[in-house]
Length: 118
Image 1 (cartoon, rainbow, N blue to C red):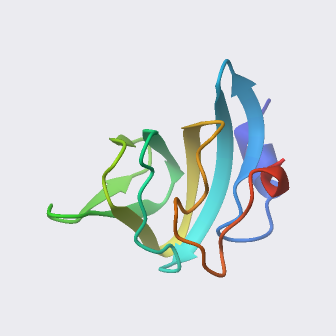
Image 2: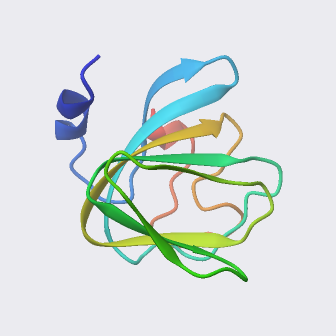
Image 3: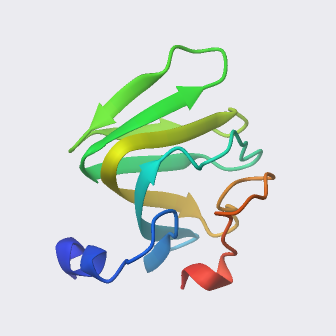
């Protein structure tokens, strides 16, 4: 599988696409630009962000916000309230449990069901 080719198939921002499965986790690709991701929590799951291109601003409650760049990886531990944004288009690979909801318990205009990510 070629990740650059898979990213070309993604035409919408904030719309993760499942590209594979390993045991009980999904491997997803997503493109974002802007700040539409709401503050949210994954109470029972960690969430791994690997930046394929661009930069991602990560905000984690009670911590300084920080930027991760192309090639960087960050894991948001379960139970941490967080949100992400990007001034310019950012391509991200996510590794998440199959039960992880896109925007945690928060539902807004960008929330996608797990079924719609396939």
